[in-house]
Length: 236
Length: 87
Image 1 (cartoon, chains in turn orange, green):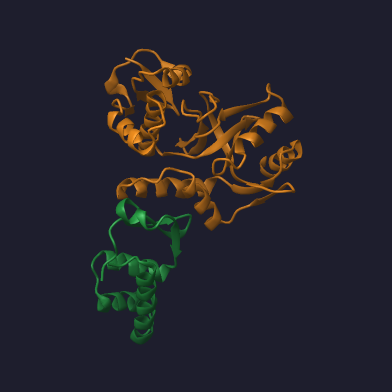
Image 2 (tube, helix red, strand yellow):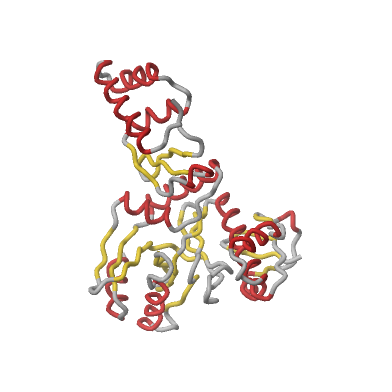
């Protein structure tokens, strides 16, 4: 039975299709009993069915991938963690999460970090949906198999330095968001549960995050200067 | 006078935040922030308090006179109602 270690959690799941299997490969750990799992994901037939109704253009492989992802992030909230729709880049042992709606350019920006600092020094932890998790009182950004359209993810837990909302601009400028804006930004880019008890848990997790992790707003164009501005603004 | 089902009030980042879940999230997609008096009224309302009980709670907590409290409570209830939080 395949067991995976994702965000420091033992996850039991049995993907049938190539995409999920390949994406999950680096997270696999030795054979273990299903009852040792922190998160046990039954094969998500119903979720796949629902995807089929909402978005019939997705093939079975994609539907399985998305359904396992959703199930994982749902279980994650029971372990002090949430998903943040963002591109996570690691540099100097710290994770910077660039958050924005799809299409704004967060992946473009994090790719420039790799270009600017070199691929030996910087890497993408997860290009679409890193997990943020509190472990022993510290916040970590975690790679997961679920990284969106590009396959970029690494099985690592990295201290979370900052969250940064990305906006397109002509000039590069970074500033700290106030608490209201920070809350709004995070809430908007995470999964909001349908059930009250789970939503309460998500809000409590966000409460913890905003007390410890600074949230910034970056206006940027597509340039290496944008990377410098972002890095200088957040590195301390 | 009751708050619609599915709304969650919680302290987040030192603020009183309200978000919607379930059916309520179909018509309310964001989050709102309410002040401490509002949060007190909201909590009591969720517990089934009527107008008198709400006024009493505000009087007790803020040590103001009943008339002022009543005005504050009514104002807040009206805001809630207009925003579609009450059923």
